[in-house]
Image (cartoon, rainbow, N blue to C red; front, side, top):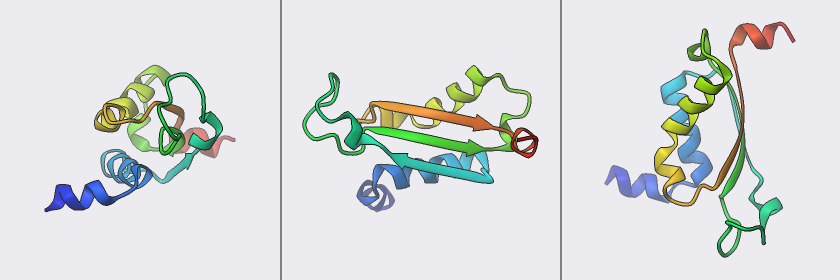
Amino acid sequence: MASRANAMLSRASRMKQKLQTALEASVLEIEDVSYQHAGHAGVKGDATETHFNVKIVSPKFEGQSLVKRHRLVYDLLTEELQSGLHALSIVAKTPQEVGRS
C-alpha cells in the first residue's frame, strides 16, 4: 500500500521526500522547469516532470567534492531517473558555504 501511495505523489514530492530523508537538508528547493524543455530532443510527449532545478543545503556534503555531492543526489534519485526524470540542475552546498555568502 505504501508504494501505491508513493506512486500517487508528484515526482517533485517523491524527490523532496527522498532527498530530505537521506540528506537532512536545512534548505531543499525543487523547481519543475519541464515546460521550458517541451519539444526538445529526449523529451517524449508532453514535458511533464522531466526537468528540475534542485537547490540543497546539507551537512552531509561536508568534505565532499562537487562531483561527489552531485553523484550522491543522482544516486538517491536513481528510481526517478529510470522512470522519466530526464535532467537535473543541482546546487549542493554545506551550511557553512551558505553562511559565507
